Structure formats: C-alpha cells, structure tokens
Amino acid sequence: MTLKKTHLWVLLAACAAAPAFAQNIAVVNGTPIPKARADALIDQLVHQGQQDSPQLQMAVREELVNREILMQEAIREGIPNKPDVKAQIAVAQQTVVLRALIENFVKNNQPSDAEVKARYDQLTKDAGGSEYHLHHILVDNEQQAKDLIAKIKAGASFEDLAKQYSKDPGSAKNGGDLDWSDPKAYVPEFAAAATHLQKGQITDTPVHTQFGWHIIRVDDIRAVTPPPLEQVRPQIVQQIQQEKLQAFEENLRKQAKIQ
Image (tube, rainbow, N blue to C red):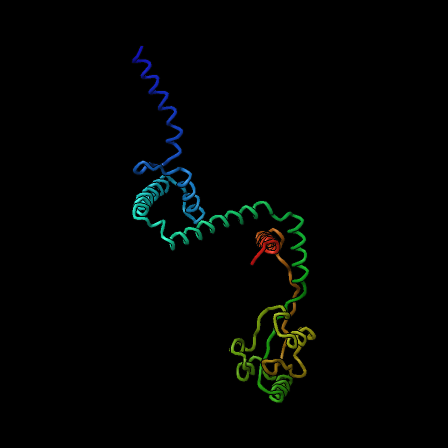
C-alpha cells in the first residue's frame, strides 16, 4: 500500500511539474529561461526572413543558454549596476516599449476602405492630365537660340543641333530627348511653353529660364492613366497610417507639460 502511495505521489508530482517545465526551454545554474523569451526571438528572426524550424529553435535555445551564462557572469561582476550600462538599458527598454506602442496604435487605427478610396481619388485627380514627350536645346544666350530656331525651320536636324550646341549634359548626347514626363516636373517657364505647343511643334521664340535659353519641341502627348486602386492600396494604407501616427504623436506633445 505504501509503495502504491509513493508511486501515486511521484506520478502526481511529475504531472504537476510538467506544465512548469514546459514553460522553460532550459535552466542554467538554477535560473530558468522562459519559453516566451525563445518565442519572441524566433518571431523576430522569422520577421527578418528566416524560416521557423526545429534547427532554428535549437539554435535559439543554444543562443539563449549562452546569453544566460554570460549574463550571470556580468551580474557577478556588477556590470548591470554601472551608470553607463544602466543608461543604455533604459534607452533599450524605452525603444522596445515605444515600438510596441506604435505597433498597437497602427493595429487599432487601420484606415477604412472609405478613407483609402477617398485618398486614391484625390491622388488620381492631382496626378491627372497629360504627359509630354519633349526634346529641347539649351544655350547660354537668346541670339544663339534664335539662330538655331531659324536653322531648324530651314530644315536642319533638331537632334544634330542639340548634340552640337545644347548645354544640358543629360539630354544633349541623346539629341535633346527628355523622354516622357509631366510638364509640372520642370520649371514653370519651361512647363508653360511646352503645354502651349501641339504635337510636332517647336517654340517660335526662345524660352528663358534660370538655366538659360531653351528651344522646345513636342514629339507626342498622351493622357496619364493612373494605376488601379488595388495595385497601390498598400502604399496608400501606409501613407494614411503614417499621417495618423504623426497626428497621434503631435496631439500627445501638445498635451504634455514640457519645462
């Protein structure tokens, strides 16, 4: 009877200890290493691109055991009590907490479909219009520009003159080709002149900007077609999230008493 009771108590003790043991991945010199710590490190590594596997879990266990051994030695030597180490620990702890705060805010403040659609509509409206395929020649003085315009109208090659005379290093070697772009990307004087031309036309008079004197030719014009909403949804969601987070931080700062 006594033997049976002993076996029973041993069995009960083992069953009671099993959940506690399962909560730790190892015990180093009497100090347990919680499984939650390993799970956190594995999750971090997976987010960095590694694949969760038994090999990774074993590697994490060994890493945490080594860290615990070194940590115990650091404590024995009084390292955590040094002022500079305490300051670094405080900064690291603050960083972890703030990262969790931001993640929690973003999780609880996801933009609605209506917000995303409204932002998409606004962006496509602002980006609407036309793109122009342009060529230009840039020179230093107005008279030279006028002379080149006369040569072009007399039949000279725009591209050859651009290669020979243009001061724009980016386009001269390509015969003045600026490729497709929104005219708003250029300085206002250049954009205004380009958008007043029809396909195939060149400026009758030189266009003066801060860079010099331009001769502009419009090769083609096409309507801008925005990408579909689903293609740009992730970028729009991220943009709205950043704006909400910034507003959250600014509101907290306004309420804070800073001396």
